[in-house]
Image 1 (cartoon, each protein chain N blue to C red):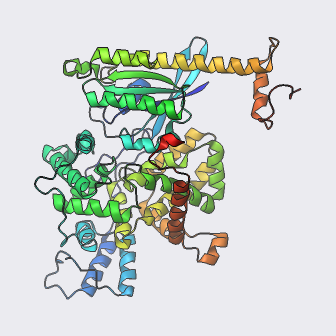
Image 2 (cartoon, chains in turn brown, red; image 1 turned 180 degrees about the vertical axis):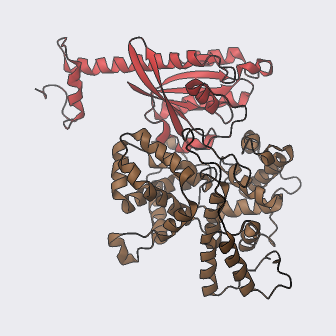
Image 3 (cartoon, chains in turn purple, cyan; image 1 turned 90 degrees about the horizontal axis):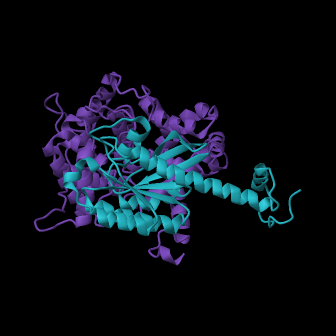
Length: 353
Length: 206
């Protein structure tokens, strides 16, 4: 069981491969750096215990301070401060979210979809088994649906909401964070009716895997592995339920929240491909490669992964454009979205074809 | 012979439980909702043919159909699952049949499974309606319970039998095309995967 109470094993990942006991790493230096940073940018606190970070705690940072703060995020936020940082960075302390006002009701179809997932969100976890937690999760998802009528409810949001609820233990803040995550961190249309954002990201991921790891790409193509299918839940939930422990998932989110942008999720996915390179090249058949994709995330050291992801750059001719992977991700998202739209992929009348 | 089967149906009807029960004989009372598409393999014997079934499982929510084609495009068969205690889930079966016919074509073999038959007392879906519907679309219907391991062997065996027969017929058809005078070697077919796809199979080879 990890430090958040999850038995994070994957029934399909093979026996004993999932290491669900999180190593108790020593985070004292990291946490110390975080506290030192906060003290440096805020008036000296009277007590050694820092106050909760309020709304615009980070709003007035200088460029240099921002850069330092990103470094701190990459090292990971201290567990006790994480939720305050998330809320502070997203204006969650001041902005009272709407949705769910008296008389507002979600449509029957959305409600039905939500109800189907309430007791199937982290079953076996003590907190999520409580009836009250499931009721709170329901309120969160309903209010999210009211805030985002173009989305309503999409499977996967339950897990993301769950990990926020676990940190906040409170409905308003969870709605706020879920809304922020779906709107600001994830690209457009990730959870919409056509899920076009996820489809596009599958194409972007495959494209970048080819650019960055051509040998691996060739091998996987030869084996017949489908990139989008093999990595679907990495992208759909921003790595919930994917790593050996929950902290690793939050670590990826830390970077996303600081940057107010989810391109880091794409970077992490690509870094995982890089880490698997040698093993993939040895694969004899598709199934082996598919299993690697499931198993690698249960084994990988999150610090190494995050550093690798952060260091990824485009190669070759892209260096002329600065080699910036984030720029490339954004431009490819635009490119593939346009191509799909041009092909009429998400047109309402599929019958016309 | 490799055959691909996709499990389709509304969320929480029991697709993942069916998969684990059928392939590994495991059942978990509390099953997390499924997001990722994944599959497990199982060998099955149909007559003298041994087939390797790859059974695919994925998220049930309707909007995931948008990503569906990458998942079910080359499927030989579909097991459409509904929950007998959940009438809404049966209406989704109808939707799936339409969608499969539209995208995959008439070729795909379809079996319908009414799951959770151990909860017969809470039944909401009328048997008569189901059986008539299954008949009207040319699908077989089985009652199953992943929990009590009921009906699954029958269900998959029926589907596998249909798929194997269809495949054999196809192979014979192909072989026949190249062997107008009752030839011997079916292996000739292999040559067809090469370049000259466009050339009308008439006089090309040999």
